Length: 188
Image (tube, rainbow, N blue to C red):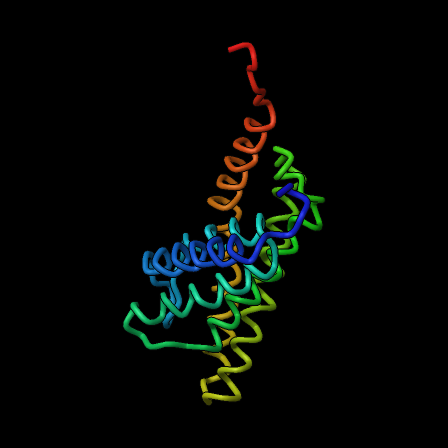
């Protein structure tokens, strides 16, 4: 199957499961910065899977991965924030379409980093704003608390994606580029 064709169902399930597991269990590693809010390097994993495989993998990996983090973190499962993570993954999942899949061609330069960072901030801001609004209306959480959580989350996640996510994307692009130069030696 060529890179330009859609993923098969089996590959979609496998990639999504790996993305959700890595994001979910990676989400247990973080630095607390506010109520139920951590500086989470695992956001780079979500950005990597979404940025390579697209919005469907991004949404499902983000949603299920966040549920895993919540289930094992001890602060309870917050479906509203898992939904926000899914939205973040889906929005970052537009990266391959915006960049015309340059990463799969072995290209990830300054322009791509800029697109990733801006897209990450917009995705985190919107995705977790929706989570904050749901918490305010559905759970009666204080408005100032959920908006503070949302803003801290949007900024800190963007920083993690800008630093770690960009480095991972660069390494993946380099790997793709290396594979493009492989040739079959038929002389043996």
